[in-house]
Length: 476
Image (cartoon, rainbow, N blue to C red):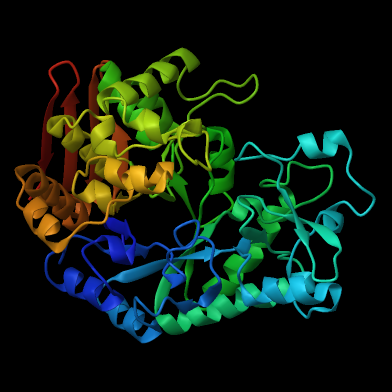
């Protein structure tokens, strides 16, 4: 993976109707700005119940977007990352529909994880309560088979996302076939979506247990044999994230978005500096994603302190809602049909009250901390909350999933804020200092001063949080 800024986007929300259109965008308007491109699910269909994360056919690019030849062409312009959705498949898939019709006689029967696969003798209340849940309900859905019998199926996320038994012979082959398709399509890196939930064992949390690491390592070895790198997506307590990072290729720095807000809101970089002392270096850094702004990643767990004190964290969340003029409240928690209750749904620009100076500082911090920076397509244009889309779908995360037109993109690229942002991106992409050593300069809590040094090359970020003034300096 190139040590350059990446873009994460849907194909059809960036003024494009197809992968070929996206290729044109990278050859023209976005040329030189990105070393990598994470394309959010482009499999059939892209407009399911979870914006492509519920694939009916993981090996088929939605024909409305193009085909694998188109993706191969795009991979010649920029390195491609794709999602390998390891935990589940759509209830509308051919495989699950065949299972509904034929039950245990279906050739796909062992592909799906049932309640009794994990709990053959039943589960105790303690067994069920110990299962780690990202959602408020239990991870099971009762389905009725064609013969009139009923079955409890594991559905970690929604009833339309049917969990796969990744340890079964057919489950292993299912994932291997997708890797083979990815290799032929020019994919250079995969994100293992929801990998933390893939292994279920009685008497455990069923989340990032030892067997999960074994599964990830086996899948990673298969991917590497095909020249594909692996990123693991895990939202978890920060010490858990540090441990996970030791055992995988890359992880996300999901703590960074709220730590940056803490730094800017409270004019105090202490918590961010402490994180930078221990944060994983094999990280993809983000401020915004296709999901919400995660809170669990900086919060406490049980009796263990988080990266930010609870009272301060609550005020940060409140400030995001105030800055967005209450619009984020309409998209967060139980206010809309949300899947994740531990995230705030809001664009990062709106979370900062549309303060362009603060937004540029936030991106500068992202570019200067250790890791490979990734920008979400809405964040690239300092996008605002899409209340019209939210009202239309009542899906909380859609507030930050705007469909840009070509005219909107052209106009945004001429904004002074975007011109300054592009200069920062080009510095991050091209300066040799960022391939060297990182350090935090000891300073007062209201000062953030970090520096990269690589032999005679250096780059420095200095922010005075009291005056909200920033200096970026570097060697020639």
